[in-house]
Length: 88
Image (cartoon, rainbow, N blue to C red; front, side, top):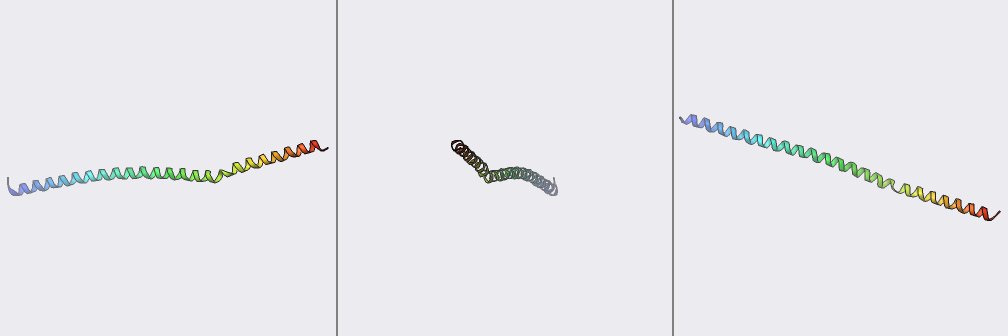
């Protein structure tokens, strides 16, 4: 074999190694992109849960206030009924 044939085979082997390395890096990049999409979806899900918890926290005092006012109204109504019944 001549030197030019060996040089050509070396170049082809180098190109093949470079292509294989490029394909390996491309596959790794695709995996990272898929993982990034997965993490972004998880982040969006957690953000939605945080918004819901904040909304629930803001609305939590209202049922307590309504029940308290209802209880006070019932107490006042009961007291008025007792006062009316005892004082004709």
